[in-house]
Image 1: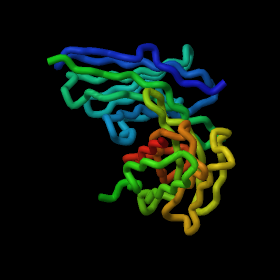
Image 2: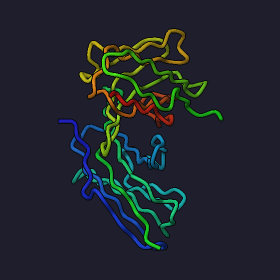
Image 3: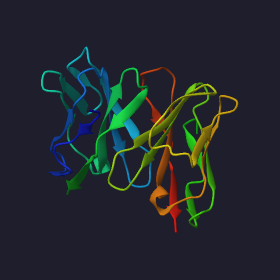
Length: 112
Length: 113
């Protein structure tokens, strides 16, 4: 069925450490994935995306890894800062359905 | 600000009343999406427009819900005879290409009392 899930609902890291947020997806036909950041009271904000013909993509302080064999997606945030505190969602684009399917989200908190 | 905008940001209504929300997408984006998000959950797809044509609707969109995009620019989402279960954040997103990045607005938070 359609589902995108996350391994951990909450993640707490020390400021300056690297954060890794994981996501499992179920539809092997999905060909596009996006990570969004959502701060309290705001809409989701695009962080980084990856297509299924890639296994890694890097942005500024963020890296997304895609393992199609086990249908797993991860978001790595380097040198985590207080401003990174938010809920992070992975979303799966269902080809032909013309919509994004979101997971439940992981709340990232930064300890000073 | 050239991002997606939504109005109002907050709406409190009594059960049984009708409400209407507006979304203004990024100007050159011809694809527009509505999602609903409840507390602690990810957004759930409701419906999708390409220009003025409504191409897909979720099973979540009951008969009390209707969405329009009459001129292919802004869109409205109306909920008739609101129920307490309709309380949620209603998010609008737009994109330039099919299967591409969707940009979200700030959402309209609906509270039905």
